[in-house]
Length: 596
Image (tube, rainbow, N blue to C red; front, side):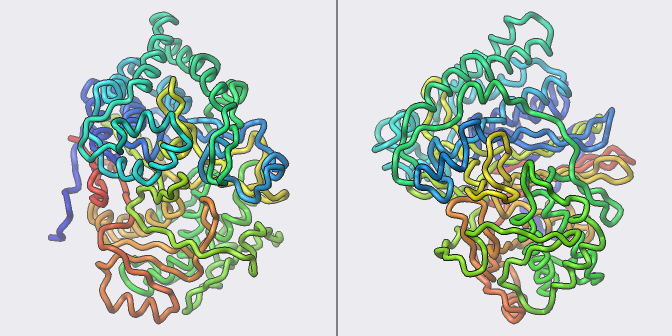
């Protein structure tokens, strides 16, 4: 029997997997009370705001993929807020910037997470707003034992808080120090914000949907929007080293609503894999799977052998090059061509027996790719080695963060399933709004300040997010939901997981526990947008012979701790038997699955 760090859970009632045990158990409690997978996911989402504030927050965003028992076709819930009306290239250029700061008020998109969670609850949930928010209100108001990474994050930005962001210092440096691991920490202002949303709902009467709509209005046009509007007008220092006011206004919140849209999908090995559309990075996974198939080499599917890792890394590099040239919101993305078998064959033909250090976007339908000047060959970029963490943030003293995010998957006994990746609005991304108990996010940093690109900044456009939930169907029924934190690594860590589980037949926990890797030979989505050509980061649990073979392929192998890459969550359902399963990542020692 193969050793795993914990069992793959199995049952028939319900399964939850998330990046924090309190979120998982809170969601499971909702299932036990008779709620469905969507009630449970909303509960987990709001608990994650409280217990992983360095990884997500109410001022951030959440994309999700949903399949219901009534309609099992996958649908994307888009909770990615757009650039505010005042966010123009001309505005940033007038401030002397050629990149959008990685932290501070200027980098904030319109917050989308809360409206998306509430839209999900209204349309597919069964419980009341008060019921699903009860755990988050309890943890924010009465306190929860803090995971150590939160205090580490606060310590990293302590001088910024003390010298420039006093409202954040008031919340996170109580007693003049960062919070300690295991310390009982409260956020009374956020507890009050959630209570006021519940009260706004109750004032609308007894109808469940009317209550949720009233809470959405309190968020987008009521007290929350008013507080954000007023606070955004105050200048605070950002990662440019200078103080600037924000751009998000009450009108921006009023104009925004979360939405439903079709996913990008790929038919693959008898499965249909669903991702968000080309406004996010999700189709990178689809392109990579299609390219591996086009190699027509069974060895390319093995994420443990050097030949397989080499093929998968090179396929990912090609897909990420396409992301840089073609992906973006509002752009004329050649989506059909990018996922066509003919294009996959063209891309597969570029994979040889030597690792490439070049950025090689393709020509779908013969179109000419255009790359940002910042990443074109010959551009001057400073080396920016990325800390290959477990998906926890790599945080600089000025609040710039890379490698962030949370994740939650839920499946219930009726066959409802959801994969959601909440992120942004990190405690270190922007100053805390004291009346609300949370900051805005910094997702605008993923835009380019250059006209004519697929991901050029423009008001109303969504930033090309790294957030990348996944759902897999077989014969029209949802069978797997998965995802991971990790910024540009999200689809890289999901690719070998899917190959191990769907092709290799490993259990969820075996596939999650297996040694992981990723490449940083791609332009980063986070400020300062740098890359390390040819570098491949691998956990030290790989056999030395595999590492030597990878070096022989030409990869610059950087070996890191054996349990440091990836924070995968996953749930499954067998439609034939109704058996449910779940696994969760042991790296970071906080993700957990639960179920029965």
